[in-house]
Picture 1 (cartoon, helix red, strand yellow):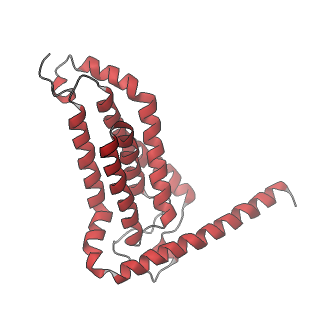
Picture 2 (cartoon, helix red, strand yellow):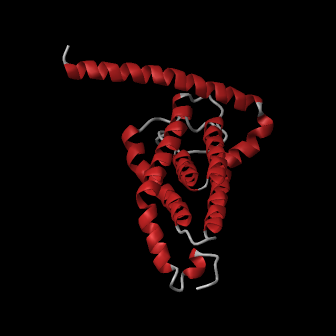
Picture 3 (cartoon, helix red, strand yellow):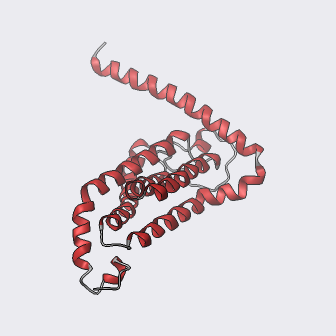
Length: 215
């Protein structure tokens, strides 16, 4: 048996077993969804737009708070967390078509689905990548608000599975990839962006950068 064939068999074995437990966990959550009809409206809304709105509000509040004081690094970190959401979403436009994993409601057509959704690629989840970027970036800036963002992000990931549009590994991978993108940006670019913000604080953009009215 050549090395390439052995590797192919190993990948196939791992994929088959991963799909086994992933599908089982998805079906467990789907049964929970079927038994909790009273929560469908809230969970569908949170899965579609509510979770991202909540995370955006937390991110904006952190940005406003970071404008206080003379240290520009917290504001730089918050801005980079926002940039990471865009970068993570763009990255998924490359990953998703390559993996091309069918949605659970395509491979398991009789499951409960709370949201209308195109039958496009499922892995990784766009929503989870954005949520992971928000949470990962804010955790690097402010622990308390970062923990809140992480809770909201994990709940959003769960809501996407509960709504029947993603497998658990779709959202887990999305959270991890989004968080990794944010952490790399914050670690690498906070210092130079903070210096740029310091320079811009001496211009007409000062009110956007600092809450201190003293020039």
